Image (cartoon, rainbow, N blue to C red):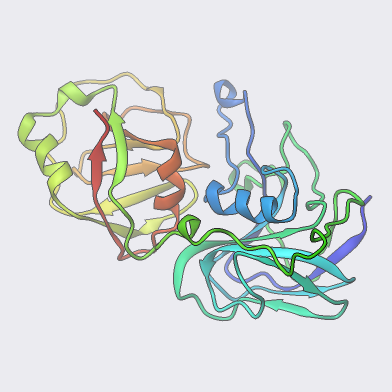
Amino acid sequence: MGEEVFEILEPGPGATLQDGGRVGWRRFGVPPGGAMDAHAAQWANRLLDNKPDAPAVEILLQGAKLKALRDTWIAVTGADAGANVPAWRVARIREGDRVEFPKNHSGVWIYLAVEGGFDGERLLGSASVYARGQLGSRFVRGDVLRRATSARFELPRGVAGRVVDWQERRNYESPSPLRVWRGPQWDLFGAADREQFFEQEWTVSPQSDRVGYRLTGKPLIPSGAQMISEPVLVGSIQIPTDGRPMVIMRDGPTVGGYPKLCLLDDADVSWLAQCRPGVKVRFQLIE
């Protein structure tokens, strides 16, 4: 067991351990899971010279509070929740210090990494918590987090700090057009519906979570074709019977029977994940 580094004082609406996700289990109905915003999670680890997919704490929106149990280096990335430590850079904290996320200002998911990476039970090859499938569990008050290795982070001699390039810090309130590929059922939709999908702004619905993000706007006309359930990838944009798109996210189903108009580019799944309910998004076809 690694060294104890944090105690959970308050988990907020939800806090779990997430890494790069599970590979090779989709055929058994187990979604890949992993960090909702892989871009931010990887940067938190890279700042500390951890492996990019090392386990990190994923925090939902706001309200989480942790107490440091020893001196350590950390990195916080992702959503802005008014953290009391600098974000998108390495920070040195002391035993007894608190790390708090009091109020969400933008984005949805926050990432906390520690030097050496967090330790977590690996189930089906991953430490990622998939609560719906009972693979791991959400943090609760009093839980103690441990460091995976004894590796220590040190800034190079003569370097005062380490920060993420500003170009890598995304504006979660005003995302660029999200890039998509044609989906398997592209041809089941008429030209007018395909044009409408790309021309209008869609609004992220409050009915969004790790399973899927629902979008509201002028509904498309659903295809009347009968479909047999088939494999569904993360980022698949399904059009259910109400004509409003649903984007499959990290903990989403592995098969589905709704037509898939498009597939969100993998790099932009992370960007959509950080869009709070009410944020408007557009899509751009990759030709």
